[in-house]
Length: 317
Image 1 (cartoon, rainbow, N blue to C red):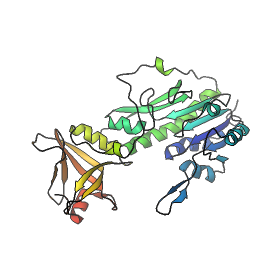
Image 2: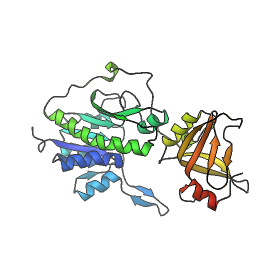
Image 3: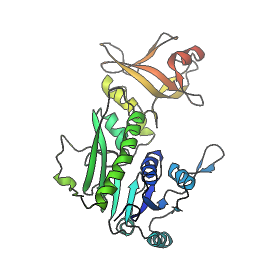
Image 4: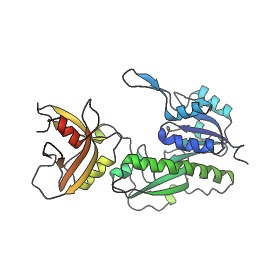
């Protein structure tokens, strides 16, 4: 079968999912339908906002479906009518069997980790938070349990000590687009030899990648410097690690920290203690040193470099 004859339905929502769709469309593959999340209200006016995948689909005149419920009979019939040979899922939702088991070549997913490590909603964040020096991307066939299907292909990516989650996200997004195309080609030419995850060698314990909530992002200063540093970069630029600070009026404010440096040093300060000259630097004590804060954001304010913030706000006590 030629790639122009293979009928593909693509499912995804955020920026991460746009790159693989772009690679397929620009590569001449036959994308007969795109499935994405319903529009969501955003901003102060609660105006409905398109997902990045929807925006791309509209710009390229692709058939678009936005089901509220994936088991809805009307949607399932619309999906059947697309008559897909293959479905591809990138950063979407958990699919019911009636959906993932529909195409004759099955449904494969692109996941942003080296499965079976980091099954779950936030694999890139957790790899950086845990201080890993390597991660990767995986394509695998869907089955009943989430992120457990047979692995098709993997690509490894190094994580530098200075990389935040945004940098790693972009590396994996670019490689993911290429891996999706390579996986489609392997399915087309019949060379796929998928491997059950339980047969794959894993170094160390399996770590999960659960969804991240606001409370997940609160910094615990009673930790070693390296652990706090990795936590901050593993949540930057989104959703951002935060802590409470006190202003000159003794009001507690939530400060989001985006950039930091680690400083190992013996001291007698209580973890969480702020140290600043009020002009150029601000650092916060950990159990074995300090986190030098380079940029942060206060409620209702824009993100600022620390020296800019200290010139305008005398809020630390």
